[in-house]
Image (cartoon, rainbow, N blue to C red):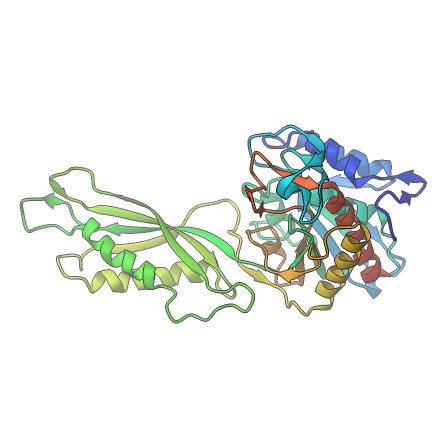
Length: 407
């Protein structure tokens, strides 16, 4: 068995100790201190770490034959959501935290325990342990995944004036997956359907009622995905109206109404394609209505943001890289004594991630911890935690998978 406390260049790197220090380091408002911890750790092991203009931490290891193997990129993020939750280590946890068959468990609690400082600890262990015989390995840690992902967008050339600085052949993205290998995730867009009519006194048969027109808009939203095929990994896309705003005076025909929508997409839909398709559908539905709504204009716009929305991504579940990571996870979970049903599965991921920016290059999402358990939310929740043995298993998984790919 490869143990997570293996000696690296004569110096022990313990991913659990690193995680404890990382969780105790607040990074919900400013990642500077957490970034210093990461850079300091890399430099302690003789690795040059650069911080780019977007705040990303980049470190590389090249083999003697970098062109004869793949370029593997290991990515996760160091920012967390608010509020900060203090570090705590509980060695006698019970309930869902203890696992499926344990009477007790060693658990680290606190903000970032599973999202995503636990995955970071595992990726960092694998990176430090790696000695590529072929190809090369890049560790790319971003500073703002929980907000706008400007760091990842700049790294991948998705911002104006930037170019893809990574150009990886394989991407391993650290997120809490319960040690499963996740090969796909739905995209997430937000849009606003604006209906523009003509105001008039409510006593008159005049004007163009934008609130009345929302009936057609909602019908178009409800029918938008009718007849579409399920994605083999992600199932059906989903479109949800979430906010309606309209009218101003109780005795006036309203000239304006707007519906905010949440879109969970599946490949091959793009943000631009979704916007165009929805506008056409709503325009047709509103134009077909009676009652003076034919003169109501329709405009659909995506919510302004400084970086692209996360689009859906999908990697072939039968890809060799997927099986390599999954096999390494199954072996590692057995070696550290986790329940047999824990880890090593292949499935979609339950949330949008920066993995979207790396597709369509083969990309998998992997890490210790869960987005939610039987008791409710874990990631982003006050009870955020990760099992110590899962962190160890994830670290060994990453190290062994990288060794196989780059050996």
